[in-house]
Length: 342
Image 1 (cartoon, rainbow, N blue to C red):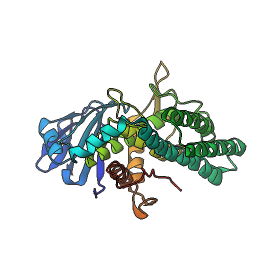
Image 2 (tube, helix red, strand yellow):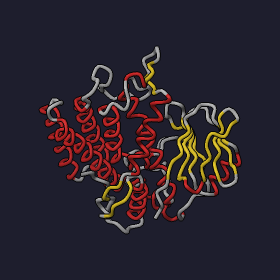
Image 3 (cartoon, helix red, strand yellow):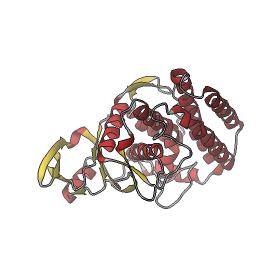
Image 4 (tube, rainbow, N blue to C red):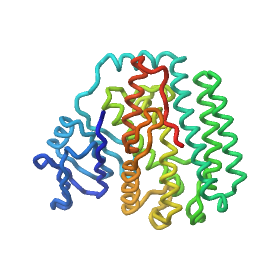
């Protein structure tokens, strides 16, 4: 069992990370601003113009601490990784199974089922908590349509059919998502998904949060010895972590709920975002820090894992799902059990 530790997010532009004994020293303008013992960290994520010494990179590799570099806007750039863990037989089985379209369709169905069920839960929670503030009939219709999508997924669909259900369900969900925003509607809205670049504040929040979740899942997969690049719903594409994106589907609604909380509780406001002349939206440094702190706190919340029926921190769920997927590939489980939130 992997112990759930913390992620060190470094967002200050011009910062430099170095090895200082058994600690990570974060230097800003030549002065040490922070020291963190490496044994307390699960990973380090650097945003934008953040440097790192070769000695620290090697130290992280030796201690199995993930070191990732993202752009200032949250786009994944690179990752420093030590020796691959896990045995070669697991990866060989992963690769063989990925060539089996029938098997891939079964995995894809599980991933999409988890995503659709959890999206439906997000809408149901909004109806429960804010029925007097939202357009309830519109949200209720979306709930019904997502329920129909779940029923379709029970029918033994092929891979392309599963993708079709996922695409339709995503459109239904995001068509209702704007109604879940109940504060400052003039500045926070979602008319449609836009990614590269995000063209409104909500899209900016979602894209950034999805990047964080993808990073955590990718790290978990590497920890158990799986190849994050070889997926089943998301097929092979150079530079894409297909399996990480597969397992991420069931966790997307988790990021959605956090984005809604930050906006609806007023923790992020209009001035926390910067809009370029071309319309692209990015967060200010202060907003990024607010979001990262909230994400870390959410990961530390304890919940009951529906499959294992054990209480654990939410951040540990990523590692548990990676372990369950590995057990499934080894034939120890009949199917991959996605996390379905209550």
